[in-house]
Length: 104
Image (cartoon, rainbow, N blue to C red; front, side, top):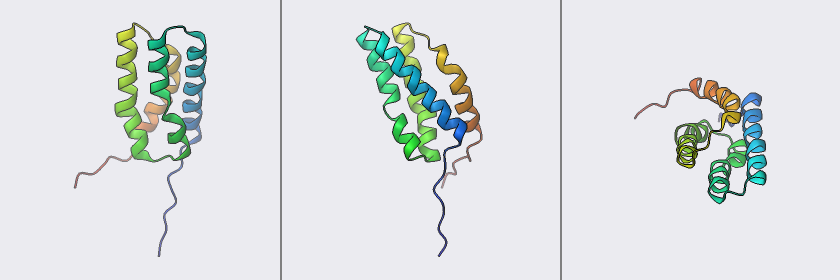
């Protein structure tokens, strides 16, 4: 009986997520804007689980759903988060190299 190893998150992807968490925490610590704090925390709260229990489909969900929701929230608040761009570029490369999902 063959067993398959669980997917492993590449180190550069893990590092990018950890940098996003780091900068998120700095922004939350330094803002007095409750809406901004909520948007940042809402964006980041699932990242530790994604790192700990990596699956390509949960990464895909982050990239296709959670990140765009965060960007819309930031736009509504009039905030720009260029500090994440370098790390999102790493994540985008990973996303583009994920195997395509097959429709049944």
